[in-house]
Length: 57
Image 1: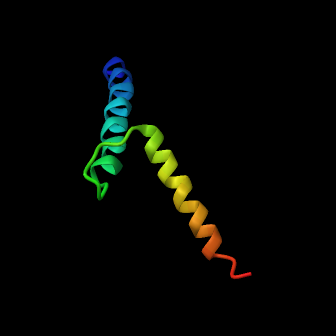
Image 2: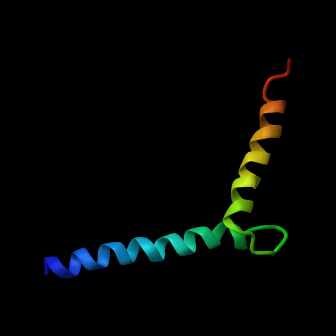
């Protein structure tokens, strides 16, 4: 029983990673599947304007 549990653990993680990455891509308003790089760029771009609006100096 222990053997099966150990083998199912890594498989579950791998499958969970696939849908997790596709979720943000499919949810894009453009409807296009962007690569991992695009996801990171979008996060940084969002942080840039957010920081500018944050401090009203």
